[in-house]
Image (tube, rainbow, N blue to C red; front, side, top):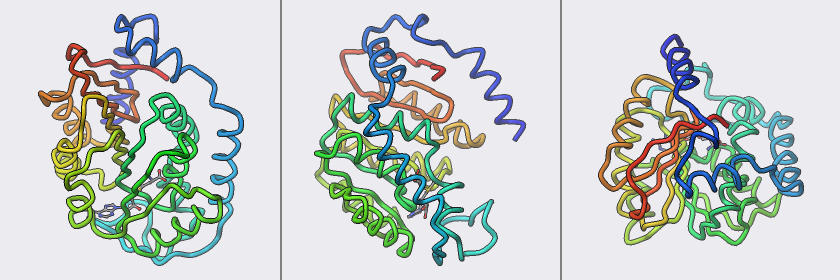
Length: 258
Ligand SMILES: C[S@@+](CC[C@H](N)C(=O)[O-])C[C@H]1O[C@@H](n2cnc3c(N)ncnc32)[C@H](O)[C@@H]1O
């Protein structure tokens, strides 16, 4: 906890807004996407799904991965509780919609579906994109699939299984325009998925890592990712680490307050 507070104070000292940015690419992104209001119909659609999830008392028998949840003691969990704890924050969900709307990626991969809230944002951002979302827990994946049917989010395919099993098959010989990393927040797993997914990138691919300041090891993982030779521009928004591979940009790391 203290580590996170320390990182947040450091973030506040280092961070800037559009006025401290001299890269036209990043300046444009801040002014035309980060600082823009989310389209009202997209926002309402997202809020409708979020409200549905936060009200849903359905109990799922959840398969836990890794060392188990720090929050949940039992594997029987209410959808409303899962959404509160694991689901994307509204502010980030709306930003995800704007980012997808801004960059218009056609092929999107999400690592970590849970009950489907961030996938919903991805789908609302571009209903023409093909979205593949990976989830290990069969009951959770099943719930998310039904949620997408209920809300007509027909461009999301959920692939069920442990990431180490599903990821290599999904990325084999494929290229992705956008990957959202939000599962298994350990340094080892994050770097493993990052290295594997690097093979899918092209010049305009974008990676987003959730919770880069969740822990010391996630912070270290983020620092290692930033230094990778293929990575050029990065943006740290405290919760997210956004990665670009654009060769026309000099390597430069931005810390931006949203
Ligand atoms: C933080 S939640 C995802 C939240 C979701 N992106 C959202 O914002 O609504 C992470 C999900 O990844 C899944 N997960 C974690 N480690 C996994 C692994 N090694 N293999 C498969 N699934 C895993 C968990 O079951 C959990 O549902």
